[in-house]
Image (cartoon, rainbow, N blue to C red):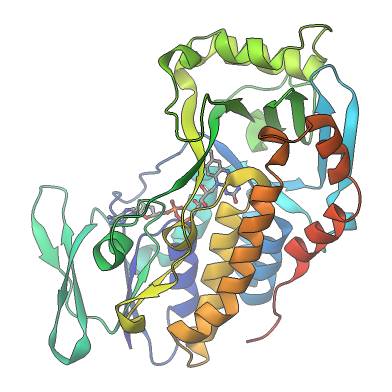
Length: 387
Ligand SMILES: Cc1cc2nc3c(=O)[nH]c(=O)nc-3n(C[C@H](O)[C@H](O)[C@H](O)COP(=O)(O)OP(=O)(O)OC[C@H]3O[C@@H](n4cnc5c(N)ncnc54)[C@H](O)[C@@H]3O)c2cc1C
C-alpha cells in the first residue's frame, strides 16, 4: 500500500514512524516547511501522561527521546492571583507516569528526525486529483511557486493541522466554535528568577494565567482573557502592554510573587506575545470513502484547556499506525478513536468552566477532588495496550 502523509507536525511524524519500513507499506511524507524550519519555534507546551503512555506502548524509542528533551510534568496547582491555594493535583496519583513540559521546537525536532529521510520538505499540499484504479494524486506547490506531484497513492493521511487543506478540499470549509476567550502565549527565554517550578494556574475572576518552567532555564506564560462575546475578535486595545496585567492583578490585595513576576514579563515583552482565540472544530475522521484519514488537529481542533491537542495527536498517530499495521482501515480507526476523542473534547470544554461562567474559586477547588480526579485518571491512563 502506498501512503502519503500530509504534514509532519506531531501526528504526521509519529504515524510516519509507525509505518516506515513495515512490510506491505511504502510511505512518503510531505511538509510545507523547509527542512529544519520550525513553526511556533518559540513557545512551550505541556503534553499529558496519556501521550507518554501511548508512546511507551507503541514507540518506546520515541518515548525515551521525548522524555530526554523535556522536563517532567508531575503537578498541577491552582491559586488565586493573591496566592490562596485552591487545588494541588499530584499527577502521579492519577497517571502511570508524568507528562512533559518542553518547547515546540524541541518536540518537533525529536519527532521529525526519524522520518526526515522519507519526508519531502518545502512541499505545500494544494490540490487533489483522482487517478486510475481509485488511487489519489496529491498536488504540491514548491518553494519557487512550481506545482508538482509525487505519483499516486492508495491512502492519504491528513496531518496538516487546524487549517487542514486536505480536509477543506475533501469535505469543505470547517466552521469553528468560539467561546469568547482570547488566549495569549509568551516565552520568557531567561526565567532563572521564576518564583515557581511546576505547572500552575492563577485566577483573578475569570482572567487566568497559566505558566511553567521549560528546559534550558526558559518559562512559558499563557493568559486567558475574556472577550465581549463568543464570536468577538480580539480588540486592538487588549494588545496594549498594560491591558493583560491589569486583568490578572487583584484589585483588593497584593498579587502573589508568581503573578507579580508574570505581569512584569507581560509588560516588558508585549511584542513577543502571540494571540489566539479559544475554539474547537467538529470531529471528522475520514473522507473519500476512507481513502483519506484525518489525524490530530486536522480531524479534531480542540480547546487547549487540558493540554490535550498535541496529546491527542500523539494518541491518534500511534493507534492509527497500529491499526494499519494490523490490516485495519478508516472504519476501524474511527471506531477506536472517535468515542475517546469526543469524550476528551467534552471534558476539555467542561474543564474550561472557570474561564467562562462558573465561579473560578469553587470551580478550581472542585478540580482537586472527585469526580474530576477520576476523570483525569481515565484521561491519562485509558490507552489500549494492544490492537
Ligand atoms: C494557544 C494554544 C496552546 C496549546 N497548548 C497545548 C498544550 O499545552 N498541549 C497540547 O497537547 N496541545 C496544545 N495545543 C494544541 C496543539 O498545538 C495542537 O493540537 C497540535 O500541534 C496538533 O498536532 P498536529 O500534528 O495535528 O498538527 P501540527 O503540529 O500543527 O502540524 C501540522 C503540520 O502540517 C504542516 N502543514 C500544514 N499545512 C500544510 C500543507 N498545506 N501542506 C503541507 N504541510 C502542511 C505544518 O507545517 C506542520 O508541520 C495548543 C494550541 C493552542 C492554539
